Amino acid sequence: MENSYRVRVGGWSNSRTIIERDGKVSLEIALSHDHCPTCASRVRHVTETLSRRNIQHNWNYPCGPSSFITVDAPGEGLPTKKYLGDLLGLEIH
Image (tube, rainbow, N blue to C red; front, side, top):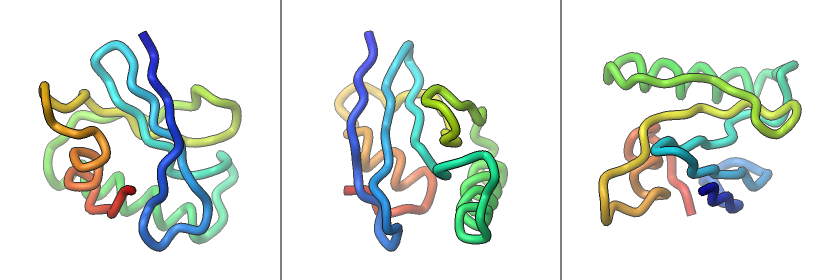
């Protein structure tokens, strides 16, 4: 079963999509594969944060040109937005 919804990330102009599916959760980081300097910086931040914490992750593109980072879903009872925010060092509303 898939659950997707829009969220706001602190300091980012455009809303982003979260997709929960098959024990994984994905957050839209960049709006296209041809990253502007701002999106390239966000991609680097997320990649470095997850690598530093040894968190398994994948980049994927489930919705056209947007770049999503995918990680294991949070444990039972942990809110997805808080989990992703803590994991990625972002403020997600």
